Length: 441
Ligand SMILES: Cc1cc2nc3c(=O)[nH]c(=O)nc-3n(C[C@H](O)[C@H](O)[C@H](O)COP(=O)(O)OP(=O)(O)OC[C@H]3O[C@@H](n4cnc5c(N)ncnc54)[C@H](O)[C@@H]3O)c2cc1C
Image (cartoon, rainbow, N blue to C red):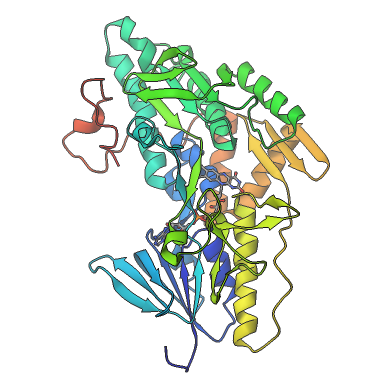
């Protein structure tokens, strides 16, 4: 790199990368943000796209649009495939070129996480996970198609497995999905079908742990389980799934026949640790130092879901707040270095608390010693989620949609959209002998 103006390359325009880019807006540097998607995604509301509450365009914004007024930042659509830390460059597959070399003076890796099937990658074919907009639309298609197929199916004996929905993993995503699905069948779909009764749909939430929302206080977990059961969700705890196939799942030796299984369990970090050949934790997250840099590389910083850092003897969780605070810290760190100022004190995460929503008007909230469940927590949940959406247009649109859904029970986006097919082939739910689980992706 020339010594004219330093270049900061940020890989990932999620919560961490975007916060870092914004924190560098007044820095005398060329900032290049590379993301394989053209949009910043608000993952906490993905389940609402998967359950038809919101449309994809309501929870994501083009990164280029968000940073349009930041003159020192260039946004590149491309997938980073590796890092050469000796040559100080990253390799990028862009829209029409492979292995493009982009040099850096400072590198921020904020590449997030993907699904983990805990060593059972064969489950993925039958149980898609929820991580991207494409995943959410694909799951929405599957859920809506299952109802369509059941309505078209004359033989009522086939309705059972079509109308059984299994969610594997009772963390926040599984719990929120289960609550939203229960409301979908009991309110939005209830009067629209003639041959089937959508309210007879079975929603099963499975987790190998002893309680739902295992990271929350026991009292809140118990309250959430009660609430889910009131909504008609079958909660099965204490056993993981032994098998997932085209006919459903096997849990504790029992087969649950289902055509729609959704994976809401583990996540695995991006391969940033492999790119850097750096020390990682057991999950594969890059172990970073107290200032979030990689040992031996003060010019490389890793933030968010892909970084591993302990605070007060406990690893920081993979949540949006950690990623945003780390992104902001990193921007400030590099800003000071470029300006020749002393380094800031080590990074410290300020935990504002955790929340999860369970259907209409009910959430749980845990912040310090405050533990809340019910409508008040739901109001807080709604306010916080609106506040953190990337743009004001999304805030307005989501707010209006939520009010409408709250008052009428109607969902905002119930279209079955087959992006990759105009032939109608993937409008079918696969049978055991003919499985096409990823056809709509
Ligand atoms: C369904 C779901 C619900 C969640 N709910 C909550 C919640 O309620 N509250 C909460 O705090 N957290 C929640 N989280 C977790 C939270 O979203 C993450 O902790 C947060 O997104 C991490 O931020 P990040 O910047 O590390 O990664 P991300 O926000 O995931 O961003 C990573 C970015 O990097 C890009 N990228 C990845 N690899 C490459 C590559 N090779 N080249 C170029 N670009 C790349 C991706 O396209 C993406 O834009 C949820 C997550 C999911 C999946």
